[in-house]
Length: 238
Ligand code: GRF
Image (cartoon, rainbow, N blue to C red; front, side):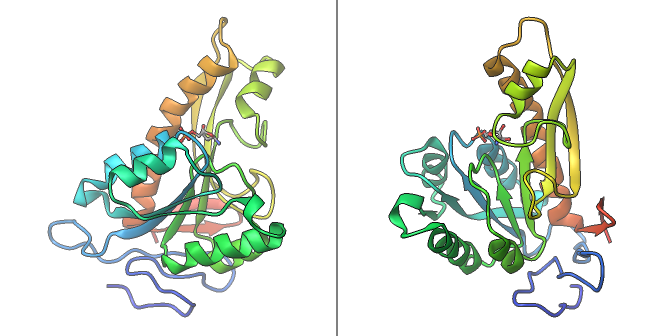
């Protein structure tokens, strides 16, 4: 294994930020190329959880190098939570309405996620912004997937905004979350053509097919090989 770096939590295969750019390094592969300690993923969801399901399916293969240790949500009764429960994965829910204010909600969410000691936190259709405090605690290990080609069409309505603008291609973007709205360093992007008869629903569904494949491929790559960020450029590996 690679030596542990300083920091509050040192996961088995990923090390924390070095001076300057965020830098992660991977464990030396075992002869079988299967990591003895799969990267710990916490996935946050707000809806149907098809991206979560894609990760859960991928994690069945030990060679993928990751496992989902918990799923969190900001609301009850969603299919995303049901998907986790069906697989026996621990879940937690923090509803904004159950907390006196946004700061208290955010602190509770942060504590629940941190308690899982995640190597990566994946926001997979999580419809809330996380706070600077959350990001500070998670130290450049929070990924989000957005259904548009950043930097175009940030925010809650990526497919609708792309359609309304009349673009001919759109897609999805996986990025490392920073303090902005869908502005973080880009890990991967996938292009999806807009077709003439598209509605927001048909376009978003087609984006989601490509988005899931991108998410699974990229999270696996990070889990196995780590990544670095230098001047916003994300690169897999050391
Ligand atoms: C995804 O397109 C995600 O990018 C967006 O909401 C959708 C979530 O889909 N923020 P699901 O809940 O994973 O099915």
